Image 1 (cartoon, rainbow, N blue to C red):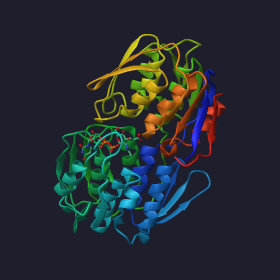
Image 2: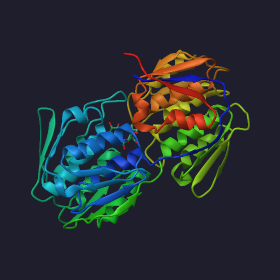
Image 3: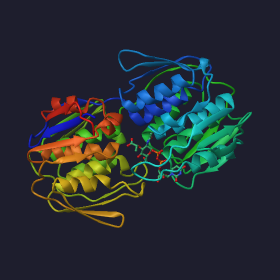
Image 4: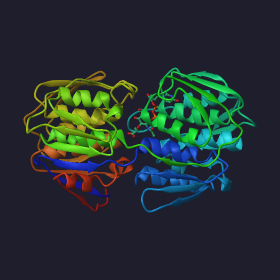
Length: 422
Ligand code: EPZ
């Protein structure tokens, strides 16, 4: 596998263009199964997970054409298969997002259970219970979710835990159900709002996107549309932290500041000068060492769990002591163990990581375990003395488009080394 090799110690300076949001592109591609017509999706990021979702749509028989500049055309009218097989789902849990659309549009779906992953058990009980509330007949057998429904019926669904893809699956299914669906305690993430925008562009009737209560009036059928995916706020946040951790200046272009309020507040607490425009965000540390900050993750608009690992790296070299509390996933601390290998002083007490900032980290070989953990190791490598080698960077390629090119544009000394066997 490929590795990334980073020479630390360079203060980043420059600007980087943010790609389309992975966590909006994935549900939107799944929702492309719903209409009775061809549709265009623009600003689709070139990521491994997007390739996997496109491969899944292909497998289902939908016609998918990937254009030159991040544009994808989908013709769902040729869909003829209704199974999301284990060998695809095990590589990307977001495959579960085809469950709602296949069931609503074709009355059937057999989707492999995703199983756990590095950051936690990640069950899908809320997806299944919600679809049952909409009238689906669902059996779990042989590691598959087997769902059948002649016509889904609108219902009131209360989610006991805020779930992003659970909200998305149920919102997609409800678009073609008979009658009104109300989803309470719905996820409010910008990616959920973007999916609602896409569905509405196809003729769905959805109110309340971005609030914790969604109201969907089912319609008979959806038509095509031409839609642009919103920018990736987590990619933007990651590059802004890269500027802060190196004491430098980074401007993220094609980014929406209003989607990162909690993250920008923490960057200001760390001592950064943060300036924003309509579609850009700039962080400037003016050569200073960051101050330690306390992080507690929460559903949007709280501090995003997908930015927790990046701030753990920032705290690792900050002035003072910072704490990190992860409330969404039960095991999203793997990166802390790898950061320790670089010299970070981190103690985990229950669900709280206590991080004493150190003057310097020293480069070492480390291993990525999940997408955002690998991003935090890259960030630490940017400031560690000497060479940091990050193995298993396929995790990174799942969620960051050309990370070594974009960081290279900012002045980082980073290169991709074609991998050996491990
Ligand atoms: C989405 O995952 C994102 N993935 C994740 O991003 C993100 O970390 C997560 O939301 C939280 O924001 C995509 O959007 C493709 P959840 P999702 O359902 O939907 C529990 C990344 O780095 N839960 O919101 O799978 C679950 O165990 C990825 O891009 C149930 O108990 O997360 C967790 O504790 C990583 N039952 C909590 O809810 C269910 O049926 C939130 O999970 C569903 C979820």
